[in-house]
Length: 322
Length: 272
Image (cartoon, chains in turn yellow, brown):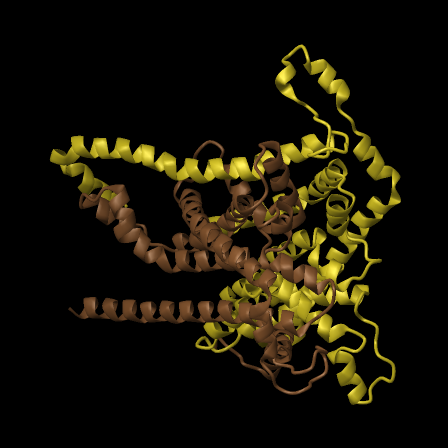
């Protein structure tokens, strides 16, 4: 870098034109930043402010179905009346009805359990891939990514046919004579766990694999030469070194699963309580937009810590990649 | 010894891939089932594909979905590539933390939140829900995925190539298109494909932001799935899977050929 800089500054006849170019490029550089920046501001950040605003309004039978809140057209004079109009009724309502509290708790529990399950299922696969012959690894990687490209909805749908009482799994188990009565799996928590582990497995495997693949395996040999048993070497050397992958994978699974809608809706049956589904029902079935907004705001508040942690992890891995 | 291909490793990979692929394989197999019962094999038949193409609602939805995916993936690729350039090249500017936050957050943000918030934005500005709003929503979601894919390629890019071109007098834009762009092109292509398939697959955000006349294929499939599993849906899913699989495999073959060609060129350059 420094060598090329010296060469560049030595070429004096081009200096004035390069100053022009630099000025022009400064504007273009700004454009590179400004265009995506503005887009995300308008379509990602501003909508959250609107959701917050509407969560403080009251539902009404009109289109759109809520009363205006924080309408700033009244100027400074109208500001105080606006503040008085704000209603926290929706939030009070959420705390009074046990349904919502239970839905949040149950979503967090289901997400936590299924994240651990996904880790347990994903780790051996990622480990096996990382230790595979180097020539095979790109193919294996591609095979993990490929299901991720096929529709989420389709992959969840595929499990309905397998898990139904008269479905393929029960047919197989009954055909083998292992069970007499069909197992009831569909519309239970078990079905949700299977669906989540299955759908989110690539998100867990990919960061685990990239952590495990970079690892220096001579460390394990060293541990074993020094008398460590394979299992001990795994817990003392391999696992600690793969922690960044474990953290990234768990966050990539946990955060979206808390708000998951499709899996509990299709595999969980009517009695399953998850907050993503509650929000959906408030919005589409009850048409109560302010309550749906309040549900979304609280969900966001619950997830803000894990999301910021995820960004921190992303930023750090980016620094290391530099 | 960098790889130990032990029995444990082979077993876990085989079981893992069986778990990942068996449900999809079964779905495809039963789309060729003669019987109307999805789970009982009644002989080979392609009749469900025939009835699929006569289902006007499904065909209309497929056409809407294809247009939304094409437009949103293309715009998202441009915006996502710009975002990736910003993230890797401009390490210091005001609001950078906010920017990287806005790029990474949508990757994990529950879809119900993104969907609801975008819908409320469209209602607030008085935009009628329909084709345009779904497309805008998909651009916003998928540009972040494009940004991550392109960014990971840019991080490993040797910047001295760009510096060399600039030192030789190439203006920045020309440098970008002649040096940077060809190198990151594979990442841009896979970013586009990822954006395309994400848009093709999305149910939740589309349900919130779509309006009458802009029902997408996943919305149509979802409403039929709720009524029960049918071989016709299996057939529709199989076609979608085939389209995506062919695209992904073709892209990876092309990428591989480019890679081989590049290595050959490099070797030739070293010899010459």
